[in-house]
Amino acid sequence: MLSTQRISEILKEAGVLMEGHFLLTSGRHSDKYLQCARIFRNTRYSRELCSELASFFAGDGIGLVIGPAMGAVQMAYEVSAHLNCENFFTERDENGRMALRRGFEIIPGTKTLVVEDVVTTGGSVFEVIELVRAAGGIVAGVGSIVDRTGGKIDFGVKFKSVYCADVTSWEADECPLCKQGGIELVKPGSRKKPLA
Image: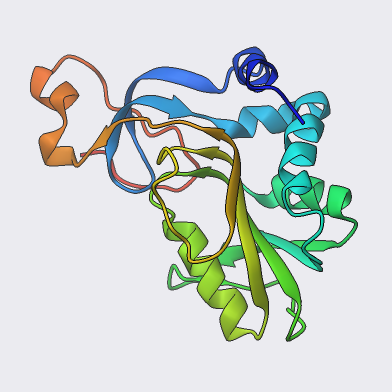
């Protein structure tokens, strides 16, 4: 089991935590952003963190690890390697909905672990959960590298994260950084969203 100190060291070494004025995928604003994609630039970091996450689900009979593109593509692969099972990812279709593409199919009854690099509102995770269930899969759990909700989110299934942080975020019209002015709003994530 990784110590809290080692997890913090990895996040710092990988340059995951950024400070400024950020537009999150959810549309909310924050003064901190966790760019977990940086973890996957170095297998030394991703192997440690994904092994830790996989250990929480080791006895759960997971047959498939699935996560939304782009943030969880490499993560699903790495976690599945530790659970010795299949993995793939979901993508948004032309209507913006999560979909299985590239010939990926969920075999009905497969115990599935849904993974996401960072959970803020859980929007993408809820979409993948719905997709897995619609395909006949059994959602056995949800795992993330970072839980930005401080443990407050409820997916209705077992949820584990490697790092839990209660990072403040605001609706755009309540953002103190916008009201203060002079601090550029940055959209560092992968999903395109217009800056307000």
